[in-house]
Length: 73
Image (cartoon, rainbow, N blue to C red; front, top):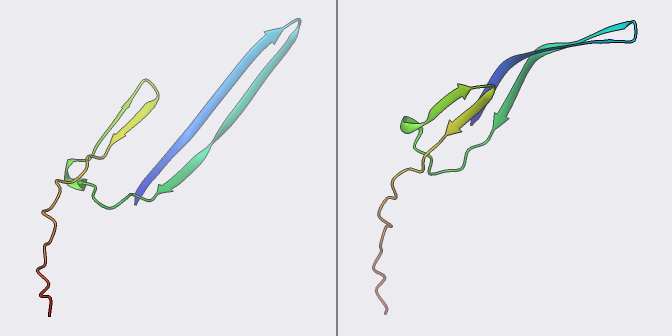
């Protein structure tokens, strides 16, 4: 499970024809994203740049498929 937790804070100002307006939105958030099986968590990377969060979760190296010999009687 990938859990993202953060806090947002947005402020918007406008001054039009003698009317001054300010809007604010703020608060905490949390998102939980289920991950598929086969993810290599040891090589996971996250980068936050210019307001963009990039999370890279590489696939784990494939394990050799288990083979089984079934005797026909």
